Image 1 (cartoon, rainbow, N blue to C red):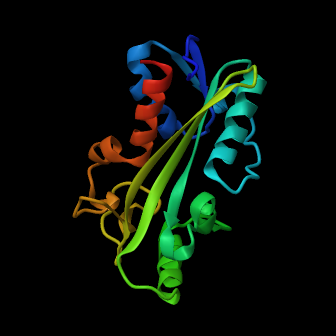
Image 2: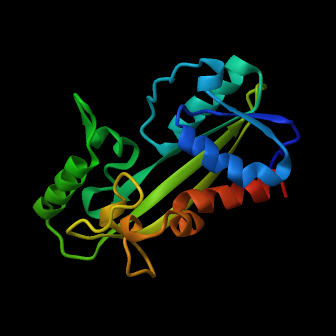
Length: 203
């Protein structure tokens, strides 16, 4: 049985203001007061796990323990079958440069790796989002969302972020990079995880 959320405050374990706004919109009907890691001056904990659930758990429990409030964290990325599931939890790491993240470089390098692997299209892949809601007593609930699709080349579209311009979701002709942000948000891996989260902990 999933534990229901019955508190009035929730910490979103992120320093990303955009992510906080997105989550605030989803939780607006429930009258919850939201804050972020930044509001509590919390550092980013080191993500030492090799899977999405493990890293989301680290972030959620660190925030819950530090604040004494329930905390929600997510870990997400793209897994490409021909690359044995890479980049996976290292999705953002593949874009790191001394001057910040460069996702165009990351997409070019990803495509080069796919070309060097022995395989033929379609290059199946999936975006994954794992949400962990942790309580100060150490309990947590896990919700996983997935959007299957394929990697396409060349890059298409300048909407979205990250690897969106090379990911074409199943059932669509457009890449995530070509989709309207709000349309994408309705069908994305994050939307899938949030539907399960709301159904499990609120409805």
